[in-house]
Image (cartoon, rainbow over all chains, first blue to last red; front, side):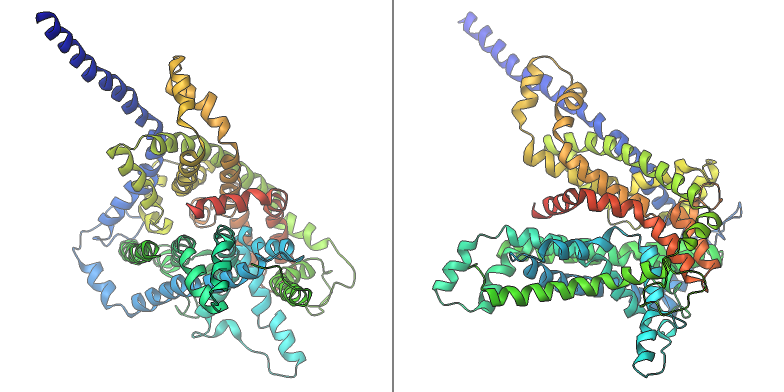
Length: 310
Length: 275
């Protein structure tokens, strides 16, 4: 009896001991992500937290002192009409370019998934702008849109019309930015949709055809539901990219005329460097993170639900 | 889908050709503009009367593009190396051990992707000045690593989960190898395909970085290509041929890299998106 008991004890001890050793070894693995965490904390998390603090001050960006002003910058922000203009533009850049990139990207993918000769070269050409710096992309389109000697105005005048001042039009400029962003990044949407389309088994379409389903019905009931994961990743990538838009605006319009094409990123840049209004710039930054967070999370939750339904 | 008829094939090929032409127009304009001799004021649509390299020579000298190329290349190289080492190291335990802590840390890394770089600008600027890192190439390296690390971890973790068999490490563990040895000797070599993808995507991203560079690299001795171009464009809005030539020089290295290694771009993007 005693023997058995001690054996039991030993066994129990071994049982509890073994996982312990394993746990110890496994838990030491966190050392591997320490360097990455250090980078993120030093260059993103800490600055972000002190940005929150600065948003409650009237700091000018270079003085040694800053005054705590409570919620003043926030009330200023919400009563500033420029805030809403700029936030509206930022939404347009995020949601507008996402819509165009995905619609056109899907159409291109459906064409270029076919086995045709032009497939490879067209894919390369559509994708090429993705690797070009958005700053240079802004210059390239400046060559197109410029008033004096611009390529589009050359065409317009050759056709006998008056040349147009395309880059000095407050209501047109934000759309020009959306257009360029779409042109540049439609390649990413196309590639993601191509991968998605290629992963759909052809049997689904054959079965649907035998049941006499129309092309449109096939698209609605097979293609779209099975593309849902590609749609989700596309929405997230494009919305985040569009909401952060900066380089192309600096290159093409500088946010102008006035603030007409300013995004939240370029607006913060102007506030900080041109107007020494660092406290207010930080407050705008807080609003921007809140905006991106709300939009991205809403989109992801909505699309995940659709994915489950599909 | 059933095979398409000859007639359909012609229609589809024409459509693809039209798309290609539409998309290449801006690049065509860039090239014709860059190669025109300084006195050639013909329309941007017209090919140059004779191909001239004068704009390239002038732009190279006046914008100090040689130095800018060197700065961009150095920053890109060191940031990419740091990204690959830190990113793959971090992704390994996160992909392998589904503990509560690891799940949380992984979600934290992914969530960081949402924070726009410019919202940390104001305090970051102050910190960089305090630490004496202003106008150093190091600060550009660190910022780019921090900004692209989440994406790197995401790509590595997905790849490790999908392709690296667990038995491999267990076998190595029996031999008594330590975790880091296992990682560098056994796991890392197997990550080659995704490392290629990360390398290429991050190189393009860092090479094209403007948001950080414009704030932290204002001194002409540390300027990267984007910063040099930005001030060069400001000085030469009336001489677009010069700007075109400078832009062409700046985008050439990444374009060549892309055309040679296209496969890895596409595969990386597709892999990340199917999961």
